[in-house]
Length: 200
View (tube, helix red, strand yellow):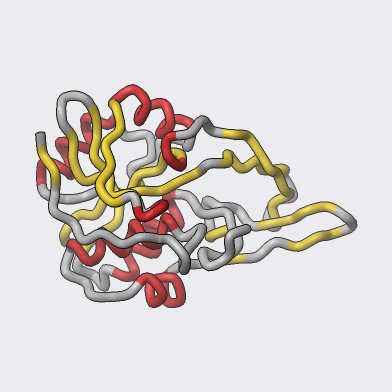
C-alpha cells in the first residue's frame, strides 16, 4: 500500500466543471507551486465556447481546448493533451508534462506513484457508467464529435492490493478508493487518458 500526501482542493461551488484544472492545481501545489485554481484557468488553460450555426451545434475539439468554461455548470471539459500543455506552462521549465494516454495502470504506478509523483487521471464521476452524447460539429474540421458524458478527472495518489486511491475534487469527496476493475473500466471509457510530470 502506498498513498502520497497531497494537498486537497474541492471543485464545489466555484468550479462545477473544473475537475481537470482543480486536479492539476493539486498536483502543482504538491510540487511546490503556490498558484490558485483561478490563476491556472485564466493564465494557462485554453478555452473555447460553442456556437449555433444554422440550427446546429458547433464547438471546439476537447483534445485541443477546454470546451466551454470550468466556471459554468453547462461546461464540458478537456482531454489529456490540453492539460499536458497547461501543466507544462505552469511548471515554468521545472517539470515536463507527459501525455500518458494508453499507458497501463501498472506503469503509471511504477513510473510515477512509486517515485512519489501523483498522476492526472481520467475516469467517470463517482465511477458511474459512461453515457454517449451530446455531440457537435468541430470548428476546425466539421466532423461530428460525440462527448462521453460523466467524464471526470481526478488525481491518482496511491494504491493497495484491491485498487487505487484518488484525490477526487467532485463533491468535496477528498481521498477516495475504488476497486481495480471498476477503475480500469471507467478509465478505458474515457480513452485511458492520464498526464504525468517529470522533473527536468
